[in-house]
Image (cartoon, rainbow, N blue to C red; front, side, top):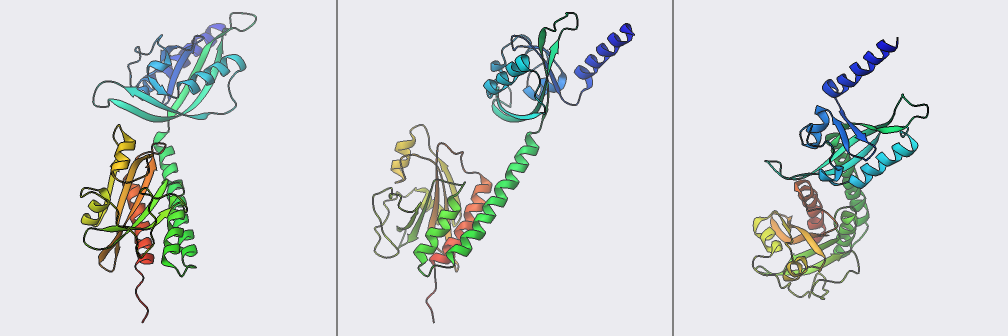
Amino acid sequence: HAQIDLERSIALSEALFDDAPWGVVLIDADLRPAVVNGYAAKAIGTGRTTLLGRPLGDVVARGVEELEGALQHVLAEGAPPAPADLWVTLASTSGAGAGERRRCWRSGFVRLSSPMTEEPAPLGVAWLFQDVTAERLAAREADRTRFRWSQLHRAGVAAAEYADPAEAVAVLLDFALAGFADHGLVDRVAGDRRLTRAVASPAGAPDADGLGGGFEGGFPQRYGTDHPALQAWDRAGSVRVDAGRDAAEWAAARHWPADTAHALCTALRSRGRTVGVLTFLRTAARGAFDRQDALYAETVAARVAAALDVPPLG
């Protein structure tokens, strides 16, 4: 029976490291990989022998502290009761995939102890994981989409209660900014390639130029000919731009708040013409605007344009 148990244990170990549909990594007591199966090596982006004996920080750019903390806890206290999601950023320095890759691994841990001693001594940790990045990103995108459209619905209901177009636009922007951007600006067309500030959100935030202005009597914005707002006007669409190394200088040249790192400008279209430009601004704490962000901004812009371009009664 002892021989059969040994053979079963060996067969199980070999199967896990050859055919398992999840990653298996044996970590020694010094928190260095001792054995890595094929799935894990592919998920991490290295060969099976490349990781052996190396610190985990050599391949994990961000998230290594959380991973090592989990391993230390298992060595000291034992395995947690359930698997957990672990987000890491992997560093790739060669090949077509050079750069950083953000991944989510559904991870479980088992403490390994020697059966040859009366008091079990920890030999290391068996770390088992599956890459669930696609599923988690899809769920996150679905949550984000539901939240955004809920905000638009609430914004439309709230804005309908205001007779003043400026107040209606301000309410629309306040709702649209939640979880999306840090600043919202509405510039209204006031002549040939001239824009005046109509609304800035959040309410009470200082204008980038220190100038207020409502729908009438506002000062023209001192935008250069290549300003993203004017580009959006010319294209009757959206323009996304990001700061370079000197973000403060970049923002100042465009008359935006000094902490701006990412911008999205989209034309306000109503009754077949451009009536203004809507600008969303993000600080460096948020990521750059993507295509889905542009689609959302264009939907907000359609509502802002309708509120801004109120036809005269009668």
